[in-house]
Length: 189
Image (cartoon, rainbow, N blue to C red; front, side):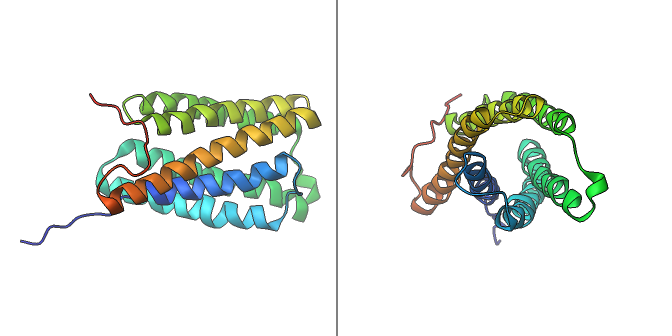
């Protein structure tokens, strides 16, 4: 009998999220402007790759992974639309108050999802904790725009994104070598 082993979709989702988050937050930190590179990453790797990973998690029966990857994939698509639509249709400009509400709701969602990581590894807990902080910093910045706060938010977002990149690569290498090459802070229950 042939075993039907499915690949682990988590690295795809984590890397799609992590790389896109780092690139966006380099812009928030002031290294370059918000441009088409970030929008393209948001649609393709941050968005589509995470939605694919979420679909694969569904097939594996992992509700947490399916909800997390699919939701954040659609987050990236919605963020790209929120940024791009006003460029094409200026009458549909979004206010800072509306963006604050948008990021606040994503912060609440992420805070709730953080509790789903408490039985997972420490690296995943860090990704979700730092993402919760990132969303609330973005909320605060849109409630009262401040260049210094946006720069701090950018650096926090870079840390968050890099933590997801680390975890994604750790999953790939640990599986490839059949042992823990990069530690992820496994929890033994």
